[in-house]
Image 1 (cartoon, protein in one colour):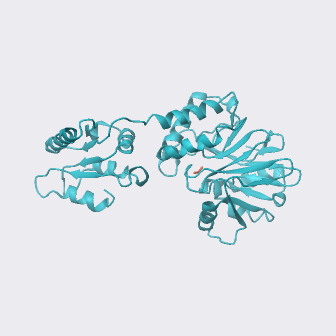
Image 2 (cartoon, helix red, strand yellow):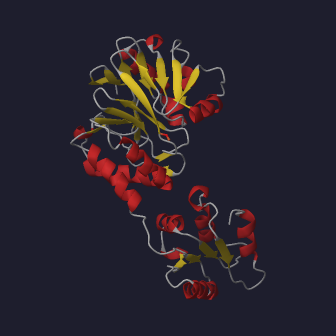
Image 3 (spheres, helix red, strand yellow):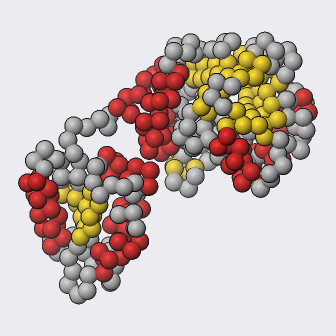
Amino acid sequence: MSAYKIFDNIYSVGVLNPNMRVFDVIMKTEFGTTYNSYIVKGTRKTALIEACHEAFFEVFLANIREVCEPESIDYIILNHCEPDHSGSLARLMDYCKNATILTSRAGSIYLKNITNNDTLPVTAVKDSDSIDLGGSVLQFISAPFLHWPDSMFTWLEKGGILFSCDFLGAHYCEPYVFDYNIAYPEKYDSALKDYFDAIFSPFKGYVLNGLDKIEGFDINAICTSHGPILTKGCKLESAVEKYREWCKLDLKVNLQIPVFYCSAYGNTAKIAQALSEGIVSVIPSADAPAVDINKYDMESLVQMLNLSDAFAIGSPTINSDAVPPVWKLLSGVDAINNKKKPALVFGSYGWSGEAVGNKIENHNGL
Ligand code: FEO
């Protein structure tokens, strides 16, 4: 897609990737994605907000050139340094010879590693810092863990435009820039939820903090880095509301202590049931269901894991090891949601019982 004027002195120069079907190895992207990037022109200075994936550099550069010569760009703002936004930066700097890169302090450290270049002209900005482009002031808002430690937003009060990077974005690609032009809004809604689940659900506390930070702002448009621009009166308000709702769904009253298990001949299931009853006998208010791993999909199991206060996992031993569904569940024990949780492993066996020992050896955090 070519460059496109979206507001006075603001241009979309990002690129489309309709064919992407997997993002970051773990996320299915049925509707492709976009790598959004924006140019904001002031009377004195010009800023480029976000770069793009390295694979699309040539198209990206051509889009920029439709708006301005790269040499005239004074600032390149990276709200977040993951390579889908920073991958083309090193090459871009060969053309943007007069640009200073602005990013958070954490981002300034990551960029050196991501680009293998510690000579880039990077300046770290702090929360509330701003730059005046001449008639347009861009203010930086720290937004850590949305979804990397480096994340920040950029706010253009004139016009009420928030550049939010991944936050409120979606891997969704249509050849339109604005939400009100989307041809398949229900598909976009599903992509927004999938994106939240995959990218932001481990950081719900930070999501609520981020929403609180922008709550008082009079926002007319949110220029995300993936998917359509969200506009007031169309998808903007509902996206913000949904993010709050998805964060609050997890509020729970009782202690959650699921007892996950697989069972070959019913013996590990008996242990699971006994553990479940034992937990409830000690903590009557606890929810401690015995959960047969094979009866749930991974998404549901990981949600139970992430919501738990403690958990147990049981496996029979087959061929000196735990069974594959148990390993699969263990791969869902992420360090962000489960750090320092009490955990127990158990199992039954006919020969030698290596499953329990292997689980302990391979998951030192348990
Ligand atoms: Fe779109 Fe976290 O990168």
